[in-house]
Image (cartoon, rainbow, N blue to C red; front, side, top):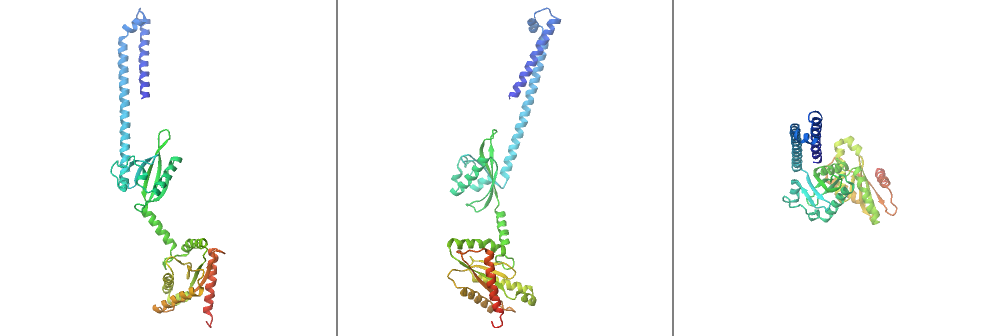
Length: 362
């Protein structure tokens, strides 16, 4: 508006200047009368013309201003309608909270998620509809935006529906840069998280036998050893190897060799607890931890496995008898060792039993 008044004032000054100049010229050339009299009584024609021209220009200028303002308002209105249409048509939840974490806006998707009717939520605090844990988490993330003035992204599991969401929190600023609110866009990423978990599980599992692979074993065994240290309670680990697997493959084919590996995995799964880590860490090598705790006897642990193998052979009509050599090693939290060292001890104990089986008098 200031620019409009400046333009009109400049136009008025221009008209008055031309009027005065015309009167001065007429006084000097055509009239032998005082300047004021010429200005008031002999300058009407040019005065009316200038005033009319000025009024016309002012009118055109004002019309142009109003047309431009109307176009701007229409553009803003259309932009707002497009934005609202976008906000309401998206599958993402969108809402707005102020510095006191009170709701200012929700799109239809979030209204549906929260079970609100239109405008029922306005001015009500976030904490009114969420558990204390969720509220504290949200306030922490919103404060991060208020403090740094930039958008942040966080994954969040909703306790109400059990789904995973990716939250994008962005600042809403006044022209002077003051942050007055935070906009939250909440995208449902449950399917993506489930896919990630499935891929993670697949990456830790042995495709043939359905038990953990080498990566899965190393991922999980660290936790077992930490528990052993924490409770100061040693544990036994079993290191097993399928005997004569190469002969089975060469004589009966690799399909039969695969069945020997699958049978071994099943014997270990059914012979030990579901909470134990049972893994195939090599071609014919298997590990189980823990298979016993301090105070257990190695002979009892070994005989238990051999008994399970005998039962399997008695009930299975294979063209060969399944044979497994196993070594038992002990993890002592008072004198801890690395996972690789523990596996090496188990491997040595296993080969000791294998050599014992291969002796002619055994």
